[in-house]
Length: 244
Image (cartoon, rainbow, N blue to C red; front, side):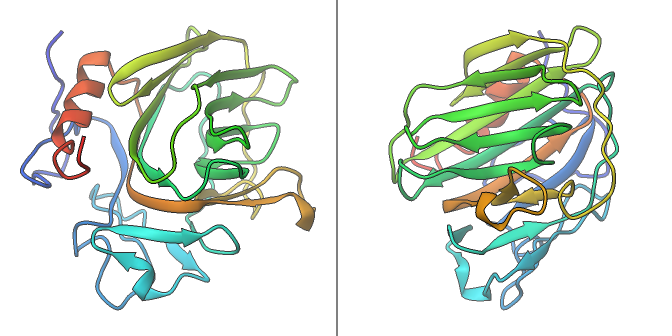
């Protein structure tokens, strides 16, 4: 299947490689000084859509050689609520490195319990690609345990018409799930905003705050379902950068 490079306003390459651009909704790259501006604490969107993220408790020296080092305590990046529903197609991508393998924490995503999606990490070293609507149905795909200190590329897709999710790790399909997620209807608010490095599993509960301990370098969000060929294309673009 051909690679859909696309015709969006993004026309530059990063790290000597390319990536799929069609339907690119958000593009954050800490290795690009236009995205992680020196001596700044925000993370600028390179997609051309001006969806910039505000650093929360992040210090500018947390930007270390092309990635953000998040402490697992109170640091994260915040955008706003993305108003997608259960009929929309989308894909979420991230390059990350776990600081430890026994802590809960959200890598990137939106929402809390009902009406949520994103990559989460578990206390057993696994990561989960989660899609959940207002019902109890939860489309979830989980990897085997990952290692601390190793860079990983995760990409999750959602097909709205088939309510099918797929999770790819380092370019390989590691799992699928077909579950009716119910009604995905996001209401604007701090618990439902799109964030990198943090989620609250229960609204208003300080004890349920789950921060990410580790490094995050790239986040991309697409308003369509990427093919496996496109997943491999995006993964291959940055393998040398991350020592894969």
